[in-house]
Length: 116
Image (tube, rainbow, N blue to C red):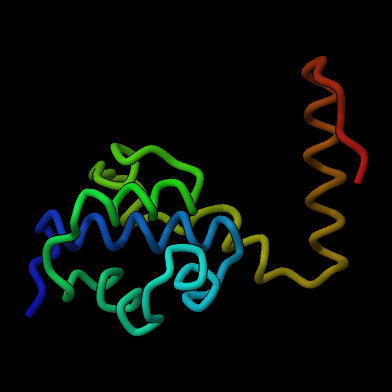
């Protein structure tokens, strides 16, 4: 059984979180860090064990985050569904409505709304 408070599990969940933010599959990440896809799964689940600092550096570089970001424990994000995940579950029509709503709020707050 994996200890969900262990450093390995927290690291793995952060790897998964940042991978999903990029829209990458485990195979995409395995290609980026040059390790087996099955090992990506084991790292994400905290079952692979301790990671070397050189591999941690590869993960951070591939995911575009700092090594510290990969190791940080963020209690609030473990229980909340990231907005991106919710957005991706919407139909294209509703995704467009969300974009238009965000643009309207940005305009109202004096920010320049991004087209597209």
